Length: 120
Image (cartoon, rainbow, N blue to C red; front, side, top):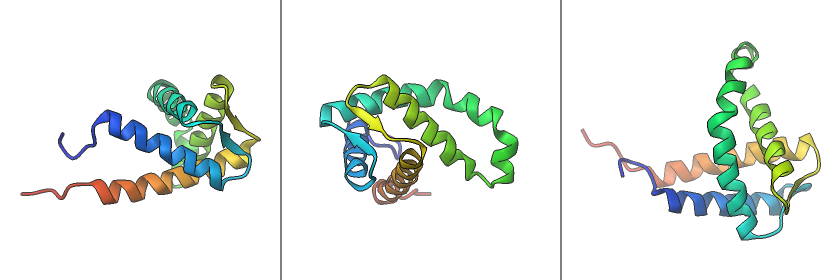
């Protein structure tokens, strides 16, 4: 699949990542694995349609912050999804921000582990 995990495997791994983060970050909670599957699915849709628009609108501040403002946008996306999915709660911006940082870090580690080397 061209250096990418199959979608189902990626979906399950992302759900597990959210469950791990919910056990680490206070104020960020998910009630069940099925809820985390729903969160990942809705977050994918939100990230596909709303996030690019927000990144474009906040491009100047994102450039000034050297891309760190992206974590603020990611936290906002998590907060938006927490308003949509029952059983997924975030108690404010700070837990959403810390969760966004931790999710990004874990995803970066998983990507490094699962990436196939490029052959020339």
